[in-house]
Image (cartoon, rainbow, N blue to C red):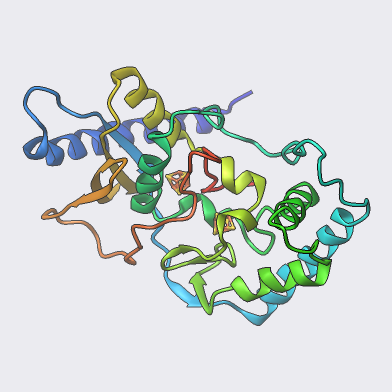
Length: 269
Ligand code: SF4
Ligand code: SF4
């Protein structure tokens, strides 16, 4: 049952989103093609500061990875086995199995505008579980190379750790996005769509056009606005946004045709 306080908070949030959407629509209006105005979609926004990855966070990730690798290597590698299912408790987004090849780059551009708000939940585990590492192990072995050992896979992950990341976010969440190559990201990171991305895919699919304005917002402020297409993000500037940490336009949860949804992109376990 939802408390009155919960209902009130939800109503306040909806009212805030209506106001922010209206603001974003007004800012996008001069950039709209008159004949076919593009939809405007709200996304969350990462606005954390960059900070050195703490040694304790590195060590916590190493311990987590080693435990999951032990589980992933508990069985012999079956080269021709079907792809393993996603981790059982991965809350994958509803559009995670989109087959539209134009959608991936557009969603990646949207995630770049957001800056990886969902990656803040990656902590020191990066959503990596044994099922993901079984898949990583199989993919690395299928490149015609000798099957990698657990130590070799561990080294790949540790080598990918950045020097600095967003404070209290995933250990791989750095200024230019996720520092892990897509192959090494968790199944969840490669498939997740947040609510805003889901709305973006549905809205553009319904219109049959892969172009939309996305507005990254946080706590009542519109921080970034961009036109996103399969070619990338074109930032809309010239409005007074609060000072925030700049983020790269190449973000993490950038979905690809091969692994359509992000995860970024990626969501809380
Ligand atoms: S999936 Fe993550 S990075 Fe992408 S827009 Fe949503 S919260 Fe931001
Ligand atoms: S996609 Fe985000 S949560 Fe996943 S490993 Fe990369 S930075 Fe971490």
